[in-house]
Image (cartoon, rainbow, N blue to C red; front, side):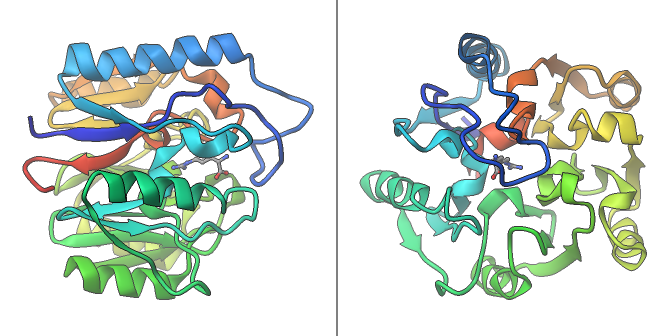
Length: 270
Ligand code: ARG
């Protein structure tokens, strides 16, 4: 099977602290709705789309562990572990590291002084390693990751705190197409991104705020957040099969579909 993801069930998911502008201690999650929404995403991926999904045990007191995309980055059976920016998420690293060790991956840790939040801020598309730095990951960390995966690095500075991870404002759909929210970057970096992905699709602010750029792409299937009619229509016209999912409870922590999965294998790359 070409696609394999790692997910973490939302047993202990809640808003217990505020580390991005979406999170508010006054707006806690509805646990049972969160569970239902997460289950639907899991079933969609496994039963309908045919992706293999591995699970890691959730840990009490680590509510954001559900967002596995931030755990690290997998490349050729090597796990490059995250160094989380915020102390609230730092204890997650040891649990993710153990999972990858138990599953016989080589584990690489970056120097402690460098923050890196894994596939939330760095992903390979075509010949490039696309990276976003500033809020959560350091540019220096991306230089090291680019060396490890031996790809040319295209790193952009993130400028809008609401789009604090690259996967909240940029989503490669293919080697030549990506969804992006232009104001998530400075003008120079936006131009640079467009130069490298000629068919980029600029999304509207209202759909960017629904986290349309946090879609999961599996070949020609795209799992998008709900309530993004304009972009989903555009994707359909381009020939993609679109699966909108309502993950409103996870938006409260600043995430959506793609944050909830970490890529273990993709199109034959393990
Ligand atoms: N509350 C989490 C955080 O602030 C959300 C992580 C979202 N993940 C992502 N891949 N964008 O770290």
